[in-house]
Each structure stands twice: as C-alpha cells, then as structure tokens.
Image (cartoon, rainbow, N blue to C red; front, top):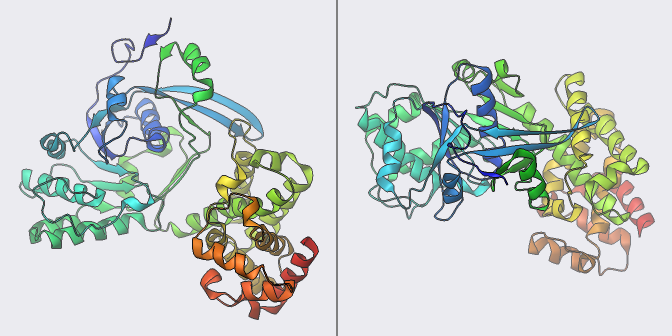
Amino acid sequence: MNLQLNRTTVVTVPERPVKILQFGEGNFLRGFVDWMIDILNEKTDFNGDVQMVQPIPKGMGEAINGQEGLYHVLLEGMDQGKNVQSTRLITSVKGVLNPYQDLEGFLRLSENPHLEFIVSNTTEAGIFFDRNDTAPSSLPNSFPGKLTLLLNHRFHYFKGNPPTPLTVLPCELIDRNGERLLDCILQYSEHWTLSEAFKKWISETVVFCNTLVDRIVPGFPKEFIHDIQNSIGYMDTLVVKAEPFHLWVIEGPAGVQERLPFDKAGLNVVFTDNLTPYRTRKVRILNGAHTIMVPVAYLNGFTEVREVMEDEKMGTFLKEIIFNEIIPTLDMPQTELEIYANTVLDRFRNPFIRHKLLDIALNSVSKFRVRVLPSILNYMELHKEVPKGLATAFAYLLVFHRNPQNMAIKDDSTTISFFKTVWKMDNVELAVHKILSNKALWGMDLAQKEPLSDFIKQRVKSLI
C-alpha cells in the first residue's frame, strides 16, 4: 500500500527560506521552474524555496497544500535518439496561498526579508491592465494589479529600502514579457496615484527580465497514474509529466546569473543581453515546423506528430525544410542552429506524448504568417528563388482550408468565412490569387510576389 505524500512520510525534506514568490501553481511552472529550483538546491548553495500564489479564485492550491508542496516530476522523451525516463521528487515548493481567501496573508508575503525573485505564468492573456481595478484597498482582478499591490506593500514595509534586490521573471509566452509587465505596473501606479518614490524604485531598482521558456509539459499522466504511484511508493495526485528538453532564456543584467547559478547545476538556461535571436530561432524552427507539418501531414492521412516523424517520406520532407530552407535564414552560428534543430526533431519523435495535428492546427493561418512566412521571404531575399518545401507547405495550407466542414478547423471566424467564400470559385488560379492578395491575412499582397504566387498556384492545382 502506497504512503500518502507529505513532509512527515518523506523524512529528507530540508527547511529552506523562501526566496521565490510564484504567481501560478499549474503544470508548466511545477514541471519547469520549480523542477529547476529543486535541482539548483541540490547542486548549488542557492538554498531557497518557492511560495506559490494562486492567481485565480479556483485553482490547485488546496490539492498542493494537501501534499505540503511535495509532488513528482516524470520526464519521458528522447535525448540524442534514445528513450529516457526519470522521476524526481520536488521539495522546493513551500505551499500555495490563495489571496482571494487571505488578502492580509498575501501582503505579508512581501515582508519576507529573504525574497529575491518573482516568477509568473498566468497565461498569455494574464499580463494586462484592468481599469476596473480602481483602488489598491482590495484585491485587484489582474495579475499585474496584484503584483503592484504586493510590491507597494513591500516598499513601504521596508521604508523604501528592502533588504534584498528583487528580480521579476515572467514566463508568459508573449514577446518582451518583462517590459510588458513593468508597463502595466507603472499604469497601476498612475491609476492609483501611488508615491513617486515607489514609482522610482520600481523603474530603477526592481529588475524586470524578458524571458523565453521552452518545454512541453503535458501534465498529469492520468492513464498511467496507478503504475507511477506504485513505482514511486506514494499516493501522489499531483504528478507532472514533462519532456526531458528544457530551455529558459533570460535577458537581464549579469547580477541575475550570479544569484541564480543554473550553469553550476547543469541546466539549460541562457543568460543574455539580447533575447531576440533565441525567440526567432524557436518561432522559426520549432513552432514553424509544427505549423508546416499540420496541413501537409493531415492531408496525407496522418493524425499525430509522432506518426509523421516515423514516416520516412514525411520525416525527410520536414528535415530538409528545417536544415535547407529555415536555418539558412537565421542569424546565429550554424552549428548552434543545427544542434537545436536536432533536439526539435527528437522532441517531435517523443513516443510518450500523443500530439494531435488538429490540436496544433488552431489559428493555423495567423500562425503561418508569424512562424513560416518570414522564413519564405528571407529565403527569397537571400537566394533569389522560391524555397520549394516551404512554398509547398503554403499550398497545402490553402487546400487544408478548402473543405473546413470535413475537419475540426479552429480559426478566426472571419478567416474561415473568407476561405469558404473564396473556395466557391470555379477557377482555382483566381481563388489562390484572391487568397494571396488578402493583406489582412498575410500583412502584404503576396500575389505581387510572382515567383512565389505562381509556384503556389501550380502546386494547389496539382493537389486539388
């Protein structure tokens, strides 16, 4: 019979001061940041725990507190072509506080003299300014509002001179996330007429880093949980499944790396003064390959990413696009790009994750514009010719949207309506011309780029 998981049944949990305040208690942060902090505690002298804050009224706080912050991370995937599996007990989490139930307790968290870092993942829509948060006397609705309230309390509690420097590391998947969060806090400072001294402290002393996070975290492995519990010997209802690959890129001053010595723990964390090349690499190679894959693979009878990678023809098609058409357009060292691309292909081959193509197909047109079109245009500018693999994928995308009633296409309603209308035309060339000339879809008139438009027209005709 398996033991209940708590700090009594696990006798090796050390006591550590809370150095990190974390907004969010979901699978990603627990399988990414908190996993890293756990390793940091084991392999360096960091010696710090994480206190979670539940960012919405209903969350996982009660369940996490029921296990006294303890849970396991299960890593399953491929590393250098080999299947890997490992399980780790995470002891770095102190627990969860729900500010909707305990506002005073929430504010007291800011009085911690050991506090050095604030981490968040409140979804892409979480960093916003809500004008309805009219006064700092009650709990604000938005995450930036809550953080402003907390920071203002800390500033005044320590009479304008907190004992430790504070660094904010948002993990929301939006560009320049640290800058966006700082802008929101300054908006709240104006909105609530907070002191000029506080505004100066926020702007000049608190460090807001832009970050990029990368790890697939499917979450609770419901299908195999009984086997996992028997293997670890505990009734853990909070197991988090994740892939082995992890990357955290942090754009900030050198002092942040000194206080978060991930490099000494062997973790894949990059500290840089320019995040942009890493973001472009991820968007073009990882996200771009996913977006390319969907229409081509689906229209050829595949339903999951792993099936695509196991098929010799499809696997070769995707690999040739990445290495011959995408990588040449990126401004980073060739070897570094190739290593990253090979890890991406390993991740696509992961036999432990069932990644459905139609799940990736959400908003496929807008994704193609951001993730793939820049590679096409850059390639044409550099080589003065059409990248045939990328352009073929473009043609497949148009055909993919030709019969939306036959599949569960999830896209903007205006986009779906446009394709539905256009594909009623009898003349395929005119239909493709109309699609490519739609500036609302592509940000430009692609029909004017004749080598590309001619290639796509002919490819679409052959597919239909």
